[in-house]
Length: 98
Image (cartoon, rainbow, N blue to C red):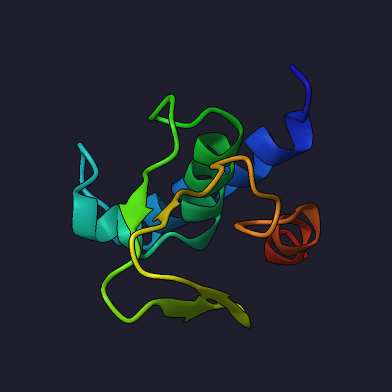
């Protein structure tokens, strides 16, 4: 196991939510949404091991579009890499465990 401290923190969060009666067995989607560390683990897992093998391409609409300060003309196909470290950086992940 590469990060046993992360597994321990996740288990601690689950046990805490169980103790406080905030989750059922099995855990419902709405309950899981309220577990911040679990959500961070899910997002980091999907960042490292994306569910899709290709970028989700979109075509720029008529008139073009500006994204993050860059203008893209109409008809251009854009996609994003799911391995983008800005989605959930190591720093953001560590802040949840502080």
